[in-house]
Length: 119
View 1 (cartoon, one colour):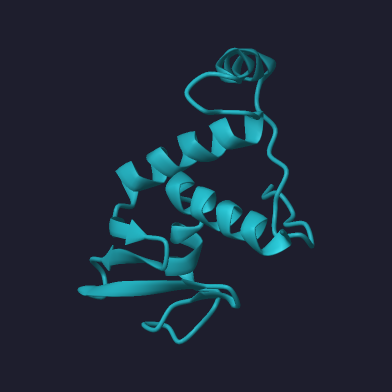
View 2: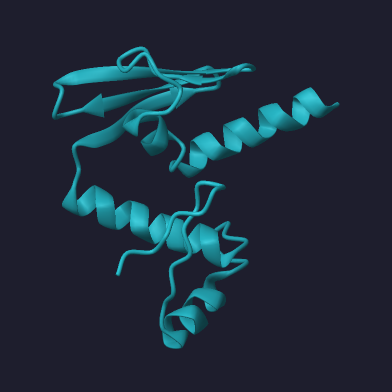
C-alpha cells in the first residue's frame, strides 16, 4: 500500500531499525545533521541512477541550469526573493523545480537568502 502524502508535502516512510541505526552513525559527518537529510541524499542518488533524465549543469546564487533529456532542453530555474520559477514549464512547481530543491547546494543557497531577508 502506498504511503499517504501529508498536507505539508512530505510523506512518512518507515525503514528497518538496522537502517536507522546505520543512518544515525552518519549524523554529524559529511555535513549531515539529520536522518531526513541522509535519506533524501540516498534517494536522490538512487533516482539519479535509475531515472537520470534530469541533471544539474551548474548553478549560482540566482539560478540553476537543469538538463532535461526527455525534453531535450535546458531549464534555467530562477531563484528570486519572490520564489522559484521554471520558464520551461511556466510554473513555480514542476519536476524541474522539485529536482532543483533536492540539490543540497541549492538548499544551502536558499537558506542563506532566507537568513539575509530575516535580518
